[in-house]
Image (cartoon, rainbow, N blue to C red):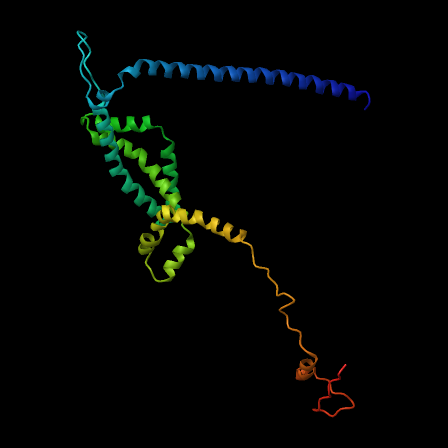
Amino acid sequence: MSANAPTADLFRTERMRRRRIVNAFVEIGATVAALLAVGVLVIVVGSVIKRGWGAINVDFFTKTPALYSGFGPRPESGIENAIIGTLIIIGLALLMALPVAVLTAIYLNELAPRKLAGVVTLAFDVLNGIPAIVLGIFVFVFVVVGHGQAAWKASFALAILMVPMIARSTQEVLALVPTSMREASLALGAAKWRTTLSVVLPRPWAESSPERRSRRLARPARQLRSSSRPRSTATPSTSTRRTPSPRSRCSSSPPPSRRIPSSNSRPGVRRPCSSG
């Protein structure tokens, strides 16, 4: 034991020294890589801002792109058509995706069998993990190629991305409604669809309303105010206490259960009170 102890201590010391050296090299390499990445990002953003800052004006947002032949001064151009086209595509995508996603989430959360709800929820989670470029290529191959371009086709591709996201968010919100509220509504004789429309759906919006939020925030303040208010601990003073006189003490008879008959007195006859 004594012969092996110095060897073990030496081995442990050498190993710790080697680990410290490796750790220092790794930290230095990670720091240098992070600084290089941030430096490249700063250079790119700075170059874009430097070159494009002079072109940002009112005409940039209110004019369409102008063709430039390469001769003469460059005409004024803007991105008005890009802004309007983006708003149209997003609006159409919302009209396509929002009703489908919300109704699907209500069905899966309230009416669907457990197995079906689990399968569809898993499919939504998988769709949320698919890159947008994959769905864009899918829509381009099967909808755009051979049929021409249109704004609703781009909206359809965007709606495919939005449906699983909105549906899963709606499911999580509906899952916050307590089960006791559903059971209470059903116990009162309401139908399943009536419970869903009148109890389950309004509950999240009622919880997130500004009045309900302000009331919820004001409740702890009222409790704190009531707890910090001093309680009245006044006790009657000695001057207000009335001390019964000896005559009144003698005239007051004890209750019947506590009256103890004396051996020298007949039952029912009260002895006179002593003057002392």
